[in-house]
Image (cartoon, rainbow, N blue to C red; front, top):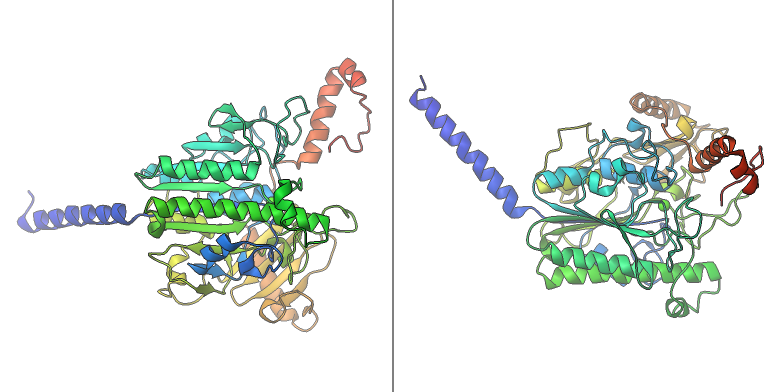
Length: 487
Ligand code: CA
């Protein structure tokens, strides 16, 4: 039989559970994550650009916190996004390469066992939207609508032409494929970046009545280098043609972000909306093997670019703004990484972080507000080429990196050497050994990459079908030894 004390405790605990639920529900913010694609570290005003105008990003950065050592999880697109949305190192589930675009392939995408953070927000009543580039698988099990998003407008592959759709072209990596709105074909008018911004504003207006989460994943300023002529003309003072077009692409994106912020202000939602902005990897730079790879970006003063594990590949423009919680003009200098965003969003919303595979990020808000001292991470980690390339950065900025699969391990101290020019490996072998041990410990929780890279995949798939239908192979000019059947 229940005694009085038990009843009292029971009533009290019911009451406080209710109280907590009400408090969470009244305070929970709207959350927006804006991701640029292949944008260089130095290509926003708040990270040092002087020839590209980004007044909206700069205002946003000044209104909140700039993470001066903010990292993407991978030096190229899809694995970086897999970590962002799962809140886990992508190697835990074998997502270490870009999936090929293939709507018929139910394997080529993010593991359905992973619970993406928009789903966690959806479970507590958030309306969730994904606008822009997906790149986490094009078949049904991977579709954003099946991975935690109520709404999707954009493209399922890794990029898109900015002006046109041409369904007569081969599918391959889908840059000319139609867009998708939820499960239906969709189009766009004019310039793609502007169309995505417009759709983001519309999503906010439609869903203003209750908390929402918006993942606004621009493909800008990823190649192809295309911008409206009038915007390119506004950068006529930039002599280099690539840089000129690239600047216009960033500029149009910045104006779109301005429109998103204005929409929030008009609806009275701005103060309690948490906005993150970051790039998915560093800006691509020319190399001996790929002289045409440069997209006009600058990672200065960082070393290397997209594809590298030097800071130029992963150290990106990274900031957050939340007027009611983050003081304007805050700088956070210790390393943070994109997968922290998921953990932060889930914590701020009061969503469940415990079900499903273990979330690995850190709630950044208490660190940014100074409520929690110390560094958000003791160390953060990267891995590429199935573990043949790797790096670790500690909270205090010591970095051990093996950028080339066949190359040497190098040691840097980033706070005094942001350009990774002064290799300390010969003078500090003990430190190198400790860092390598930490990386190996972390790597024990990883699994081999479970997908083929898209070039290899397309070659093998084409060969398979051509072998089955020799007539088709003949008419397509198939040769048994395909050197490059992919553009
Ligand atoms: Ca990218």
